[in-house]
Length: 373
Length: 165
Image (cartoon, rainbow over all chains, first blue to last red; front, side, top):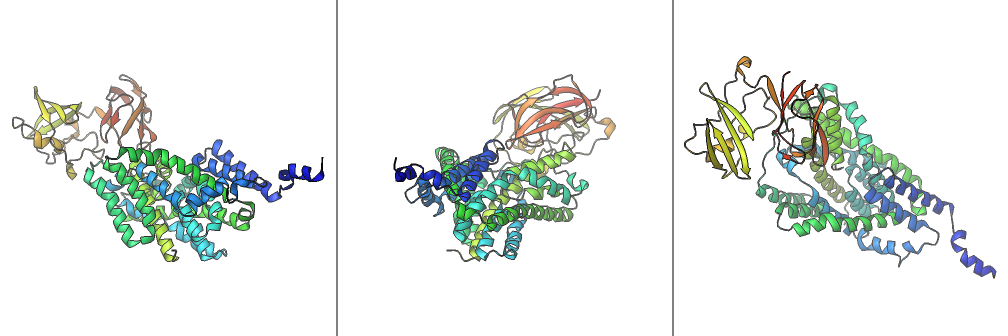
């Protein structure tokens, strides 16, 4: 056989690079976390697969005509996919617990402090302002918002930011409880908050998504795409007249887009873009953003507890983030550890859905501050 | 079925309300049975039946029943009832374990007649896709289990009645 023929046949082997090999391991690690650890498997499995497929030597998948490149240009580069996911999330979310207890909006707003705290730290670590803002948005603890904002502000960091955001999101049940316990006293954790169910009229439920869209849209125009799609999904759900659309948006459409989004994000994880010190810094800053968010929510809830004369359980502050519904479950669980009759779930769900809205608003505020177009 | 024990002008009445359809109830009061249709239900802040009411307190009359109660019923005033002295409370020896939030009963762990310890799981309630264990607030004997697996419950709905040994 001629030398050139052998070369051609073994092109894949000879094109292996240490960086590429390392990325194959990263892809396998993500798949491992998804399959055996069940870390956000719906996203981490396609991301891991995308990472694997694009980093194989001479892989055509990420080239101009490759499937992953096409998927990226189809919906990540132009921000379409995160918005379609938001329609699905809106169609799945019941804002009832928030509407029954509107003061939870404050807790949700407080839970966004981590974004700005992390932004400042990232600046201190030498990131550019647009990069720092993208890293800070990990503190929104909201996957689609992170993808949306970082792709607009710092597309080269999209891969690490998305992976970090989703990995830590899966770790909310591990990250939050120690912070919740450290920042509250036993007495505070024991504060009982009976839940009185209110019947919400259909008019309220339908008016809510419209009102939020209009108010947020006017105040924070950059948040309109995020909040508008989230609320569109919710309007479909609450209207009750388009069940077919609600079903597709929260089912088939959300699943298809999740697959496409995961693969496309995974394909941005190429060795030269991913294997940098910046990725490690993002890994560190990401967990800090989660911790700061939780801490800010709890501290604000402690303040609410003081002004309410001891009737507000500060644990609920920990649910003022976007990780839905994990954060609310964690809060409920930590509360029950102290008192098996103290169910904080419904209050925490209210704070949690408020956190969801607040995080997309915060994303819009960041974009506006940075003058993104 | 839901039983309200109310006191009007010093006299104790028992009102049993049985839901026969979403908007139809059979109300038993003083030996009379009445078919009642619920034309509208509005929660009035102070009349919400919620777990805030300690089980020992006299249960309040739900405001939602008032507008549709036929005139033949004795006037049911939802005005705050005077707290009964603890000795005179007929419910003292038994207490209802109520649903702390809306949800679906996943499984019932006890049956009538069982002796339960403080903190022993009574049933599992799935709310917001999270399974919550409802435990006995005190030791006692299960007098009655009001729900079965699969039932959806509203906040404050009685789940299990406990009586003292």
